[in-house]
Amino acid sequence: PQSLGRSAFTQVPIEITVAVGRARPSVRELLKLQRDSVLPLDRRVEDPVELYVGDRLIARGVLEELEGEQAGQMAVRLTEVADLSDGL
Image (cartoon, rainbow, N blue to C red; front, side):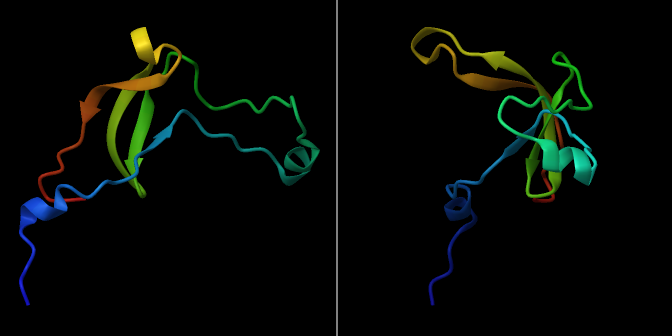
């Protein structure tokens, strides 16, 4: 069988999760949630967000709103990137 080169794997898309914060409500509070409920997070708006592939932290950054044709779309400007030379 023909083996795939390393470059073939670099073309595979991956999903990155951007974590803006965490909430830790009690079960009682969780059961009370409804439309328009507010769930406070453990971070402020200006705090860095974290980027994960699976459960591995790969970078940190700040949220930005794009301009021009993509106005209103969110993006992340990276401020720190993990060393991924040993793989994900």
